[in-house]
Picture 1 (cartoon, rainbow, N blue to C red):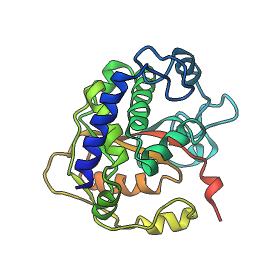
Picture 2: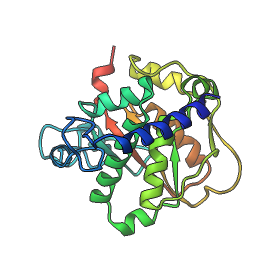
Picture 3: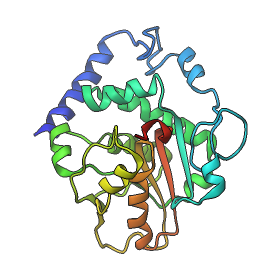
Picture 4: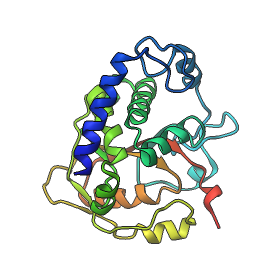
Length: 249
């Protein structure tokens, strides 16, 4: 019921947009039938210093963060659109908690542009599947949509990466990760996901998509499930990569 409501709501929002002058979602200046104006687009397109492995923002031009120099992750590479900062953090909250689906469209488009600028067309074409981080059924019913799935739909459609749905399930209803320490996040995600046995994943190059990655507990839990299915490699796409040190207690 909730999913149908938000689908209809999204269609109505789009219909209203066609009747009103196009304005930038960020600054309200004329955007010429685009979600954001050219000024905001240029500002958000500025390159950022980040770890080439885990996507964590860096204060210098060094290629890797200290953690990645000392240890390996279960994924091959993580690409983040930005750190957890305005306007991305505001758009994510508008999408998840205020049901502003158009914010999800903008985030999806920005992520598409960022991926296309950091990966060659050949590299993008090597991905066999794109998988959105799933929500538990109860949370999905409460929210009415999965924000990661909404963004993944846009990425899949525009970058031509096949979207694989209903392969990974969130079988355990976990506590919200926000505000938890690293150790509690890992414990919270233990045995949270299960893979439907369909033999589609063996030997495949997979990309996971989530809205925010902080400690990597969710991603690592999913990676363990995928590696157990003998995938060839796992990359990660996300909107924001947050410094996990800010969440230690």
